[in-house]
Length: 121
Image (tube, rainbow, N blue to C red; front, side, top):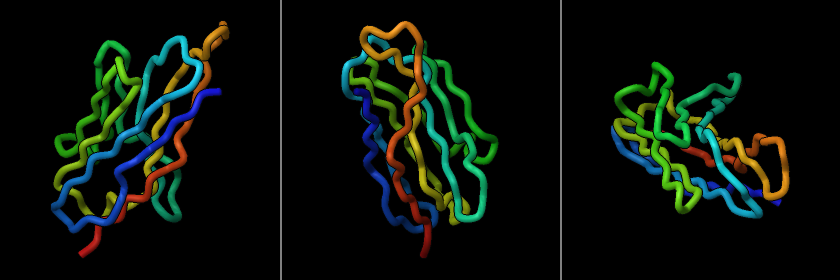
């Protein structure tokens, strides 16, 4: 089975920084596009950032210039560096990966368990 395990969430003051990590483990043939979504209380889940296996990135307008997504293909890990955090960034952050499990012909979307990020003074 394939699992995504997140770490790095927590409480931070406005203007501070946090770094989220997400490791894909299990019987994996290939990990393609990876990304981060977030869901604030009372709101729909929204895309934050994505990164292809070739390194191309895409960001939501609200985080552009403040957040950076990166990946380490050798470790099957995706990161989200969050700087200049604002209270409006408070949400549960979920990592996502399009994965070809070993022996499978079709890719599948997998999701992490979620990491709480709270920005408050």
